[in-house]
Length: 202
Image (cartoon, rainbow, N blue to C red; front, side, top):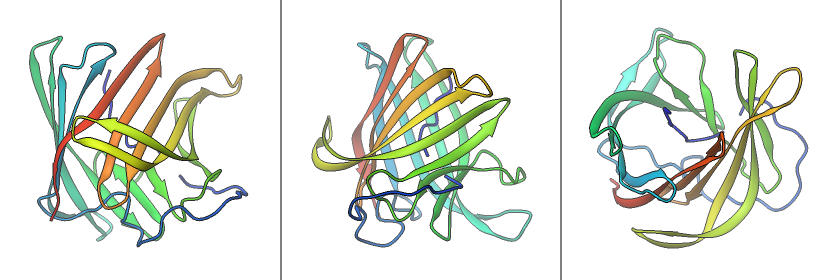
């Protein structure tokens, strides 16, 4: 299962509650050259996979807009193999977008500001499956890197259209000025998790 799960935007619906993010748009996912995050994870209870993201530099797409190139490396314990590829992240207005390829104009939206409890948005729609995201407040999260009080929880669901059947559930937790600290994915009766083990921010 390929998991790039920064989850989450293109339309906003009414919401209530107070504003969660207090800084700039980038406070929950700081983007700068050299920033690096490493998570450990796998199918629960196994936790032997390692996933690393490192921001390399800015690249310019076909429309002339710039984005950050992010190298991804995953050591998959079960297969005893390392997989490498890259994605592109871009702040555009109040949206954090993720592109698998800048030549492809479609993007998933990771975060949609302002982040408030109850805020919802559409992430993407592909092959009859609609992904939506929902801000579910703040929670305490434990990781090998440390414990985080007040991590922003973003829940995501993939549902088939038009019968609205559930395909996948996922949750990401973000911490201001840190980034994503934990991800949990539930699909076909299995649970996959990853938790932050190290980071380097510039």
